[in-house]
Image 1 (cartoon, rainbow, N blue to C red):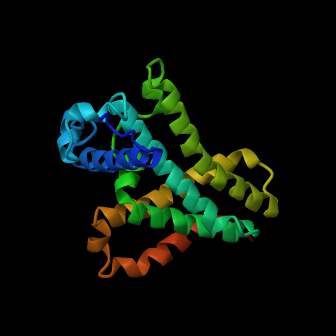
Image 2 (cartoon, helix red, strand yellow; image 1 turned 30 degrees about the horizontal axis):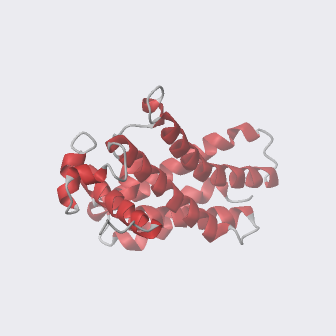
Image 3 (cartoon, helix red, strand yellow; image 1 turned 90 degrees about the vertical axis):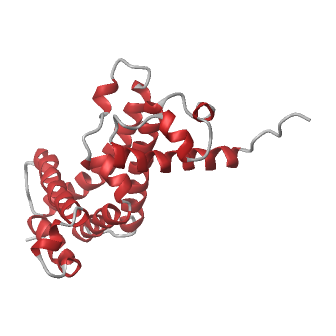
Length: 212
């Protein structure tokens, strides 16, 4: 008897398993230490089996990044889509961003912390279209913040809306700082109960955006 064709669900489940294990390897061994030769045994298959699902390690890595930003976008959208007030919307998204960084730290590190290839590194390569798709997914997350900040600026009668990207970058630095210091345990050395100050830190990074 011939082999029973795999269902689309089976294929997607195996791809998810591959991506999840890839995240672990990249986090522990770095991008340079990540390989399909290492990935295959880690999920209990021959390395050549991986090629039934992905062409090479770069394709796997870019799918990991894209999936991470898709998850982040979903969190940001779901927590804020029902909120009309722009400042309250920004508060909800900021809290969701920080929570994502804490709970999905494996994704977060690869997306925004580790020194790994970025979209521009793939220009002119066979992975360029995948990399540009990943970049657009990441920028869609930023766009949610930027549009909300623009609405706040209009309400505060700020006339230079071109600064909204800069103001988002400042917010991103603050949010990233909270996530990074908590995840790498530095906050444990700065405060006896770091979990108790997260809300205070979030309010601090949001202070420049609060309506007058």
